[in-house]
Image (cartoon, rainbow, N blue to C red; front, top):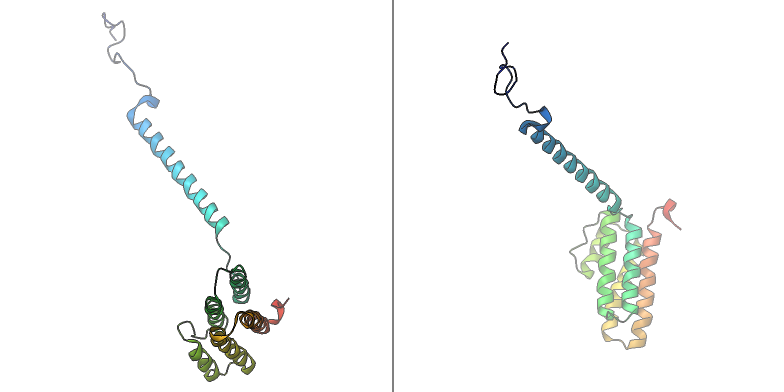
Length: 173
């Protein structure tokens, strides 16, 4: 082997050697691995966030009781009229009957609700109580304020009683 007189190196070696960690291919692979780690970290963080904040679905009776209570509080604060209150509690009761018993009552009027429940052999006490609530909504339109408050409290208690009566035995408190 000859030594190059200009560089002082053997001829079979180039004058410049690039270590592998300084090559473009190595740097590209490092960037790809780092990007993959970032995506993996984001994936697991998002998954943890979703699992932590996933809303746990309550049983139909607990959800209905919560909705009734929030409707009552909204009315008691003076933010709703008697008509609005009755609209809210009938929606809650229809949703409860749909979720709990799979009765198709969501789009029905109040009178259609009573007829539907009578045709589907629902417990007669429940049908009678719901009919009283529906009549209470008509009563509220024409009564004075003191009678309205009394009727609203009575119908709220009726709805709560219906829900508690139809809860499974092991869930009753």
